[in-house]
Image 1 (cartoon, one colour):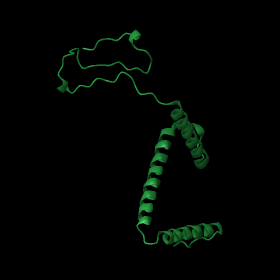
Image 2 (image 1 turned 135 degrees about the vertical axis):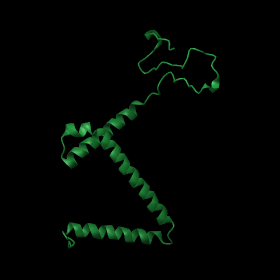
Image 3 (image 1 turned 90 degrees about the vertical axis):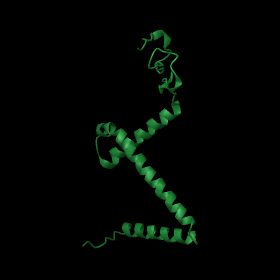
Image 4 (image 1 turned 60 degrees about the vertical axis):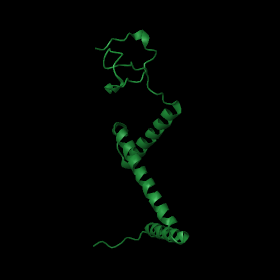
Length: 135
């Protein structure tokens, strides 16, 4: 049976009451019941501000790129943040794989130069308007 807790014992709204499974304070330690911690950890104001600004920037980026309404993008903000996080994780993963593969090569600067030249050639041909034939 749970005992009701008065409002006077809680110091702030972030404090959570410590609830045990029973009133028996002499229960054995092997009962598997762990008390809930008395309060949640506080988040720094800087972290809240930074995450809010990043979320707002991502929402505005989606509004500009995909031409959706601001209201719709704001509703989809959690999905937008998760999608950008997953994309960033994939980029970091492949960058690490590429870096480690490049370090195992005999002449890494030659491989990096060839890769950079290919990217520059594709960019230059795209700017010139070259289109590949379609089948």
